Amino acid sequence: MGPAWLLNIALLAVTVLAMEAGAWAVHRYVMHGWGWGWHRSHHERREGLFERNDLYGLLFAMISLLLFLVLPALWPPLWWVAAGTLVYGLLYTLLHDGLVHRRLPFVKPPRRGYLKRLVQAHRLHHATRGREGAVSFGFLYAPPVARLRGVLRARSGS
Ligand SMILES: [Zn+2]
Ligand SMILES: [Zn+2]
Image (cartoon, rainbow, N blue to C red; front, side, top):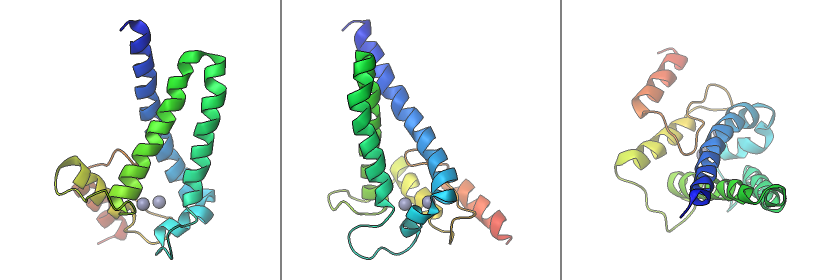
């Protein structure tokens, strides 16, 4: 295992972290902003198997696929950047759709630890009605639940 291997893993890891930062910003400023038209369905009760918000997942999956075609042609190690976007997509599906929203029957709800905090934090994201005033926009990182409750309490003015 030479330095090439280290570079590949670094590219993968940095991409996954950058994706979480990017997804936070997209969720905060696009999905709860001008992109609310698609995201609203995710903050309402779902009728049937799919919701309009799933179009975001589909769109980002297509962008990830496109990166696999484009990036390695520019410079072969960039394949690992494309792989990072795929890994992030899988983690998002597993944690957000599977763990939090119970859409994957084989994913069991966590009883303790960080994953429980992740589930509770995202439940608090869904605690507010409409697109304004929500907390916790990340999908892999969740702030401490007590802190989020404090923010929500302060915003509701009680
Ligand atoms: Zn949201
Ligand atoms: Zn959600």
